[in-house]
Each structure stands twice: as C-alpha cells, then as structure tokens.
Length: 342
Image (cartoon, rainbow, N blue to C red; front, side, top):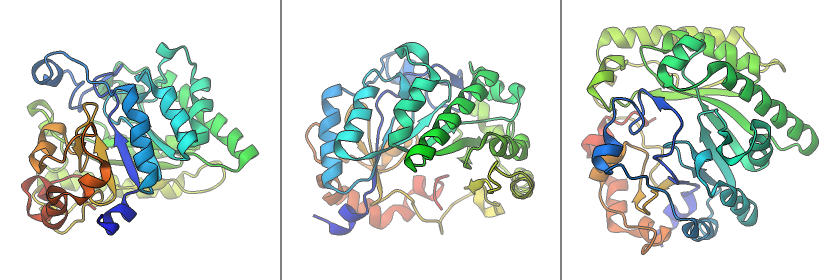
C-alpha cells in the first residue's frame, strides 16, 4: 500500500445519476441545449449507480480514512432515487456529505425544501448551490429552467433550518454559492456577493468556464488579454464588495478561486498544483474510477484506473497508472490547461 496516498485520500465523489437533471444550464457538458452528449455518446440512456454498490464504497472509504462523500456533481443528486440510502450510510459509517445541488430541491420524491434541509444539514459539511446571477434575467438565462425567486426562497428556508440546527447542536453546515465564471454573468459578481451576504451564505466560489461547445467559447475569460482584463476588474470589485457587504453577524463572505488572471493564463497552468491527485477520487455511475473532475471525454485520456466492480480503491491508489499520473501530470496536455489547478 502506498501509505502517502492512503493517508491523504480524504474525499470520494460518486457520480450517482449524471443524466438526471431538471435544468439545462448553458455550460453543462450533458444538459446544455448545445450538448449532444446524452443522445450521441450514450444513445439516449441514463447512467445510474446501482444501489448495491453504495455500501461497498462507503465501507472501503471508511477503512481508508476518507472523511467526505460527494453525491453526483453532474446532474442533480437529489433526483437519485437512492439518495436516502446515502444519507443513512453517512450516519452508519460516520462520514460527512459534501453536496452540490442546483437549489431547486425537487419535489419528485415528495419532500419539501424544508424536509430536504432537515435531512441533509445534520450530516453535511458544505452545501454548494449552483448560482449564476444576482438577477432573475441573468440567472434564468444561464440556468435554463430555474425559477430565480423560488430558489431565493429555498435558500432562505435552508439557511433558517441550518441556523436553527446550529443553535441546538453547535454543528455548522457551510452554505456556498458555486459559480461558473463567464462573460454573460460575472458582471453581476459583486452583486452576487452582496446577495450572499444578505442571505447569510458563507462562501462564494467558482471556476473558469470549461468550453465544451463552440457556441460558448466566446464566454471564456481566458480567450484573450482583453477578456482577462475584464475578469480582473470584476475580481477587484468582488473584493470591494466583500469589504462592504457583511453577513448578519458582521463576518465577511469567504471568496474562493476568485483570483486575478495573468495573460499567460490563456495558455498553460504549468506552475500550478493539482488539488486532486492523492487527495480525491471519482467513481462514475458505471463504476469507472477517475482521478479528477475534468470533463468526461477529456479525463478518459488520463488512463484506465479500473472499475469498482472488480478493483478496490486501494488498488487504484497503488496502481502503476495512477502513480505515473501523480509523478508526471504536469507534462500532460490536459493537465497543463486545467481550470482547477491552484
């Protein structure tokens, strides 16, 4: 066993139901109106992780010292029909959940927003809500199918229940607005921070756009130096807003990955570190292991790391393919241009 890998692996993402979503965000690899992924790559099928894999994954994760499990960050995890089992396994194995959701709190399961909140807040370290505007017009243009006013109400309900739980247990679940940095929404970045502060959200974070489609390439801030200058101006205003607008308790909003870009960032991220290798691991709905969250087609180029049906998590970490990637990722074309490196 590679002890370093074992000791540093602290989080696993299980892509439970990547093709299930009730929105069509323009930048989404699978659900955008510009995407042909489900139709052409999957033949219209929907990948869903079998229920009987879940406990095996949790058991292995616990033995390896993993602290957090993330249900699918592709699609909407609250639409996964075995989500309640994931919650129960978090309790059973004393593992925390880190949740990314689009904030609609779908009622397909019969649960209200308040019921969802009471279910997830006690075992979740961070609830990241996909957020892409400070106004109805911008938000609904990016996250197509969303009801902006309803999601605002949902966030208020979530935070009210989070705060009530903290007051009686002293357990604090962080609430985050998760952004995609694009040229059609980041003119509202400072106002998103203001809104987050008003709502008692803890953190605003995000990442630069993955340009999956020709139709959205013009939305990238990395496309040219003029776009980088525009982004840097938004960053400056974001930190001014952070100073000006405070949470109800007077604390500042945490800003993460909202950093100035240099002109060379239009090319490679050669001097930046991978935040995932030896620390996090992904398991797809079909059982395939992946070392990071790069778009599905791109991360296939990083190699074959096995399948949960016939390979253990520890075997992945020990494997020659994985260790070679750890040692050599800075030489790999995909990794050189990765948006997630820090």
